[in-house]
Amino acid sequence: MQQQARAPRTRAFGAEAFEPQDGTVLRWLGMAGFLLNCRGTTLMIDPLLGGFDMPVMIDFPLTTDAVPRLDAVLVTHADNDHYSVPTCRELAPVTAAFHSTRYVGTLMQGEGFPSTGHDIGDHFAVGPVRVAVTPADHAWQNDSPGASDRVFAMEDCCGFWIETPDGTVWAPGDSRLIPEHHLHMPAPDALLFDFSDSDWHFGLDGAIQMANAYPRTPLLLQHWGSVDAPDFPPFNADPAALPDRVVNPERIIVLAPGEPYTLHPLAGRPPSPENGNGALL
Image (cartoon, rainbow, N blue to C red; front, top):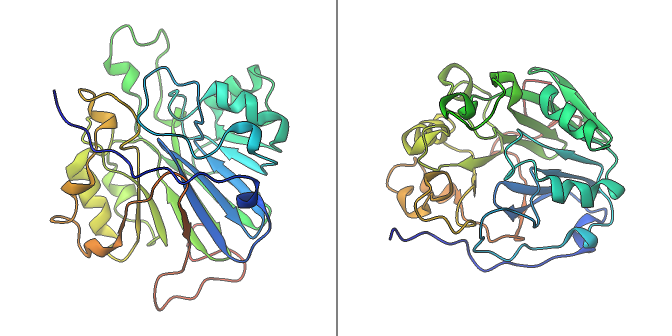
């Protein structure tokens, strides 16, 4: 049986991570999830904190009942490792707003969540954080007979370009590589990096292309080391495959679930006091 790379030991946290603070801090939640605290404005991206339908190899760094409040939850697409209905149901009472694509927005509205569905290219704000909805190509269901009765469109999935006063974070979501998009953005100050070698993800080669298109951007590894599925490529990325192929490998950031990462602008480029370093918003 194939051996899996495992995430480092979880660093549990609680309500302190949601308090007002200087700067912007990200915490990997395991799976594809992140918590972002921008000077007290809090967002979760693709949170999954339990209730998954496959065995996991990690301890989640917090429980939903330890979340005091969220200004927003951002969801990239409908797959249940990104849009976790059990997690979102438990977070809904303390969450001001949910954001996703138009399709996922309709699913959220059916759950009674305070949600907005967006078109690709839409912009919205959460306190001082400004977000652009970016394209993704992850309509894998159309290539898998029996997976769904619905025909999926590219616009059913998305990424998020997130500009803060302290720098820009790009969460591209699950996607096949779209060269004209993924290789030609302004350089973000942090990239939430999916490097799983799967046909409906970037694939390892595509992920390397993307990483090297932004040779100074820190790569915060995600979508790896969390699910006990040794024969399922989307969950089997291995950080050991990266250093020999990534330009400036010292920027590969292997976070433990719950470990804080402080966002900084790339060297030599001060952040805008209003909206980070990006050129989209």
